[in-house]
Length: 347
Image (cartoon, rainbow, N blue to C red; front, side, top):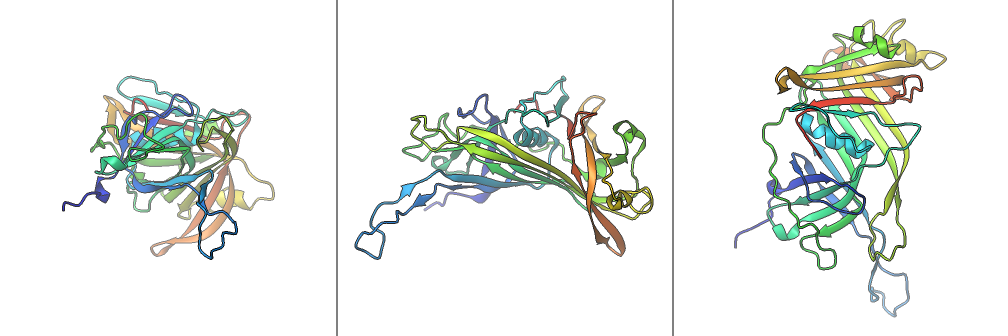
């Protein structure tokens, strides 16, 4: 008997929905790793049945469905999906062959969440899942020691479930959509990154910190309320998301330089009696071009305050691990301003 169901034949495919509650065909296959975890919450009733073993049939409750996925070699063309799924705002790109995606999430108003349809399966076409109304609860991007390819860890919240192998929850539209992973997309390397730190946003251009940053981790978390309403819909699907608090954190491992330790440094700001506001920028600029004369790039600006310092080491040298929290700056009207230049034309 020929075996079927191979781990390396799994695929992760996503498409941004035009409306909550209406799954769409995936528009792209992404080079991710991991699996969804749909817990349908089957529950045995707490009843007396004249038996020490279960007799009465279990019942279902609202499901708890997530997917812990990783991108172990990030591509510029994957950033729009990740930033859309965590920030929302229905961002669309501008430009010709080189597409510019600008994400500037609101703080004093509430951006509409972007929800996505997630298709997951392998070579067994009768066992593909279709998860609608999916978005990110957390996104962690790691730029590693050694200046190699960045990685991402994602926690997806999945709002509805259907399957090509389900009688009561059939897939619509039919899954899987026919997509292959694009093999040669340009990757995001720390070797292509510059870091800047200054007291004001407009001083950043002249404030590059050199010979200091070994690695960093960018963490973004977003709380979501899951809203379910009695609409005679005969399912447990999430009907909407309520946006809660958001946290954005930058953790850098730094060599000891004048910018990182000593009077007037990041560490000095951390030790002050009153929190010191400053601005951080990182800029990735690839050697590969999205269009003639336009390289792939990713630029982020954040107003920050330093929150923690711990001692580290890199090889035989000491290092400092400084963690900053982004905050909303009302004068500049930003908390996180991100511009991605790539060739991803849509979601």
